[in-house]
Length: 234
Ligand SMILES: [Zn+2]
Image 1 (cartoon, helix red, strand yellow):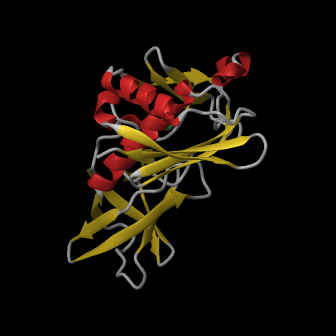
Image 2 (cartoon, rainbow, N blue to C red):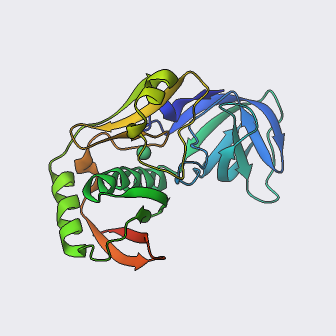
């Protein structure tokens, strides 16, 4: 299966052939839908074909490597296997997710401490840090994030081999999410001069595109765990 979002996160639509279709999911030979993973939710959108269409309410990984399952709305009509379909994501939502996801990488650069978990939502995001320090300064973190955003750093994927990653384990910032090794190569996300870590998600091209953000609540979730919430400021 061809995963178009991996090379071009800005691609909103494509044509594809239906490989299989059932009420639990539709599989295509190629897609622009990002499947839930790495803390980023799956895309929503629509499939259209000659004589029909169905809304896609979620996308998740299938059993095979690079397999994406498109989940149709309940009771929706289904395309026949072999049918040609136009595949389109809800771009407004995806772009908000890309902006927030990219902002999470900046937060990793602003707060020192191992990341133990996190989630990107529509218009909000959070990261958990393994930190004994309870004095995280909301105003300082907000100012640092907005400075990195305004500096408009370039954001780019870069691939390295499994062997290179094994030789440089310090590249892995997130302890809860192991990078997907075994395929021979690993996708890194680089924000020039700011952050470099394995990530398979979708990101904006430059940090300026994120727009102003602010830190919401900073929660103490246990002795070592600080949960930092981010929101768009506008
Ligand atoms: Zn990422």
